[in-house]
Image 1 (tube, rainbow, N blue to C red):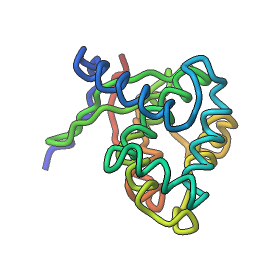
Image 2: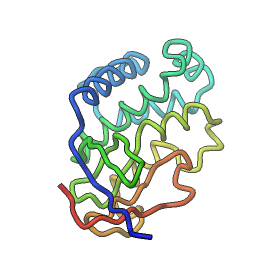
Image 3: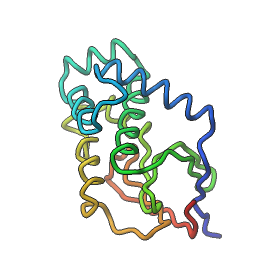
Length: 171
């Protein structure tokens, strides 16, 4: 069976509009502005996920869209703080909007990751979003990867199994 390469392509205008709309909704729930420090955004997301009253209030406001909105805020804060970028990645039949570090060593899928976190009891999340944000900041806590590896560091299993998607190019 031939090895399927991971490919990266730019996000579409529709993707960017969806990210922007979800980010706006999240910032409203988090009571923050687009200029808020990324660490403050992460702390606010953590409060919503870890505090039942805050989670209930956010769920009342956004319903089933809470995870998607928080994913946009989580991803945006990583993009702004660490120089990652929004992109589309594909591997075989799988394609999604994600954030990728500048060398394409790591890939995070904010929308599915935060949708999982938003519907899971906080204490049952293997790696909570603020911990993954810190790991990205430290760099040394992430798995070994070479440029262009696209190692998934977030998905619905929240790092229970780290998967490497090999690729020999990075845009």
